[in-house]
Image (cartoon, rainbow, N blue to C red):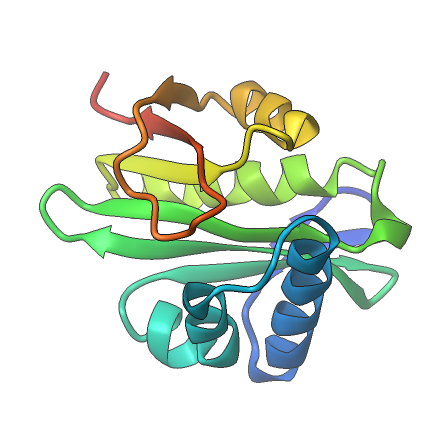
Length: 161
């Protein structure tokens, strides 16, 4: 667990956060796009579709309230590969660098788990998100893992480079 200051904590998934995981992501996705089948699969069943398959979900708590989340979804065993997925921060908590803290925590978690790489897909209209991912060390790559119609940008961190 990371204590950034007295107000913000980054914590691992617990069952009581399941609803917040879905609500934060659904709110964010619907602001810019439409929900797709892949979204519902992960958001309705995070324990089965992410955690039980070797993934990880983190939450940002602000004064004890869940205001952000992000997941590592395991996509390959050899080399161990994760998708950084389902990052969402409540509008009321934006501007507090929670996306960066969540992303940094999960990149470090993937490295600790001996991952070969972490990739993500996003959309080119989300310029602040792309800048955040670049700041975290993600490099642009050709789109090859696009399970979402909205995905037109792919980025990755290769830990073996």
